[in-house]
Length: 262
Ligand SMILES: [Zn+2]
Image (cartoon, rainbow, N blue to C red; front, side):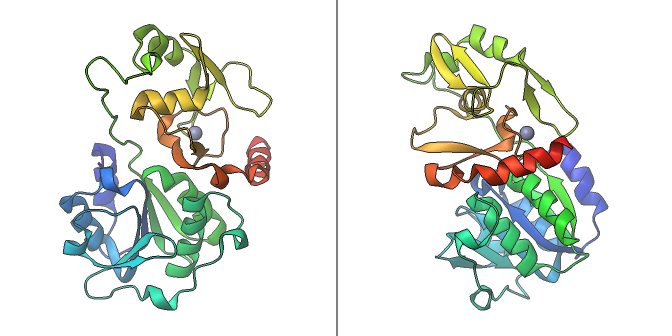
């Protein structure tokens, strides 16, 4: 949920000033109070865009489920977003390979105007900030934190390395935080540009270990995308899980990495 720093930000935003608010990993983040805050912040024709199926959304907003994208579009109660009239782009038509990032790009451009304030909340926030910079919206990032998933007593079955204290402590000595909040892995990158970490003999990509230590074991069919497009980043809150196919267009990320390095 939102932390104290986020609340300070929210207090500084005028009522009805946001053209769009985008939320990812919504299930863990949305409670009624937060939703009501958002309803208050949105312009009359503003859009709330939510991934997942958030409980309680219907009580505060008029919600339309968009089956093609499994996305929930919500306007304020008085001015629901007419999502049926908005064409949703085909995946390959947009430059981002990440599905949430693609929809964020589309949603910002389709649902807000230049100069609008757009809030990005959850793991999508870095993408929102980037798209806003490129498309002349005022992007604001909120909610850098999500809740850690506590392991069951005795740890995750079959994954002792995720709760082993030595492994966890040693991992924390191997990264340095940068000005964007990225945890930059200090070890040698592998051939794909990712960090590697060995935990009681189990070889991990470093960012995957960070994610699993925070949120529990990850289904092997899922891969992790970096919202911050920094492959050496091991901040679990800059990562989102996605099906393998969503993470294959690495060229886009490479391009962005090169841009950042300039
Ligand atoms: Zn990062």
